[in-house]
Image (cartoon, rainbow, N blue to C red; front, side, top):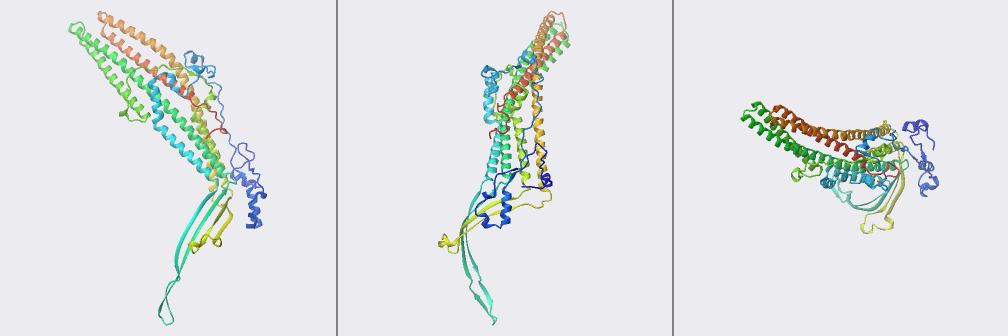
Length: 529
């Protein structure tokens, strides 16, 4: 089927562009036409229909987006393995302990976190929304597939009508009544129609809806993974707030003893009222910090309830004040990330959907051929309806093509191309964001592990200094200002250490989230619905 080059260029076919698919012809021939067609249509129409059935696909060849991904992560340094952040990956057969389980949060060894994750899997609202969207996408696939099949319907009707009745004037000017005739009409029939997918419009719509459903499935996996990570991180922040409450309560008890000691020394005339005021100020400010920590803990508890799909009034956790130990994350290659993260897979499927939509938009340039048939019975007597003389039938094709649309089809094709470019750029951005996220949290986890070690030593030194200052104050060697300064240093060191531990858990939790995606290759040709 030879077409003018200008027309092909107009609808987007470019034989010199490797990413676009040329017209591929089907192997149908005029000899494969139904036998009834030549008897029903003139020779010219028959010839045109035969040529039209030598159909072609308008969908471009799909190629998954390709990006230059480094072989390894930049921040996967020897220090990462030294501090137990990034351990070398091994096969599950050689070392089952290094593989991340499907329930990846179990590597923390926290039974409370395990229970929270189970509750979130059953009641998280975001996951429920993703499930509903997936069901809708699957229904869209079934609907698009149904458009490829013939439709069959039935009709039945009955009517009773009066015709010819009324009055008329005769030659004498008299009104004369005239009786009309009553006619009954009954009919019963079947009708069928089938639109032939000559240009790939219907199959393209199926491909687009299937890719959309696959993207929705990936969105569901991403929503589950995000909910799991959010539950874990909120739980860690809650425990960090509890740890802060614990050492603030301990500090408050020590400050209360210091205040009583200073008050007694003031009564004895050993110290001035300024020392008492300083001790009281330290005590009251620590009380305020404790109240703030309680507020923070309560808010995290409320956030956990929302993540579990529960009202805050129906959820509570006992206070432990213990933070879990960050586990080592199995090492992975940067390219492996593209196969693991469901958000990347969802972005790739939307590129495939947009590519299929281009073929659907291009198919609008070509005529549509619909085969229709109808048969039934029609008679004025209901009891005599289903007899052979009352049979009627019709059979034939219908060809429709838009000759002028003011550029609507060209605009639709251009819009589909723009959507493809947009989804391809979104895919690229998703990949780059994922790589950045791993690099950021990898370098953060490594340095925070070192910082935690240093901050622990700083806290020990501050506590030792506080002990010396208290002893010297009780002996009357130094003023209370020295004790106050040492107390402030210890409190600050405790806050810093708690913050570092929480931040380290956040970084490790994000790394586990990236590694914990499903092990499913990103292959559009082999993906299951």
